[in-house]
Image (cartoon, rainbow, N blue to C red):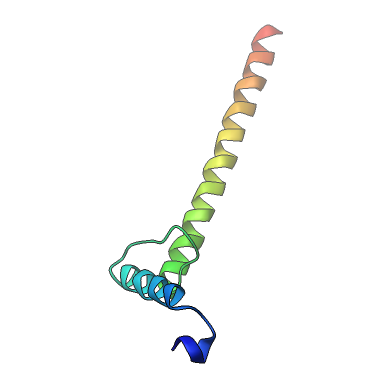
Length: 71
């Protein structure tokens, strides 16, 4: 397999280990191999972005409320 792909044995071992973990439901810290884990990573990224946007809106609302109270 190493000769056919031009990749070293260490990389192949890492990929096999990661693939086994993904099939067990463990989300990898790097790029996922299986479509299910790729989708999970996409959704986690969307959640993170939405939470970031929500925090910005909360801070902006607090600033606007402080400004209206001062008037």
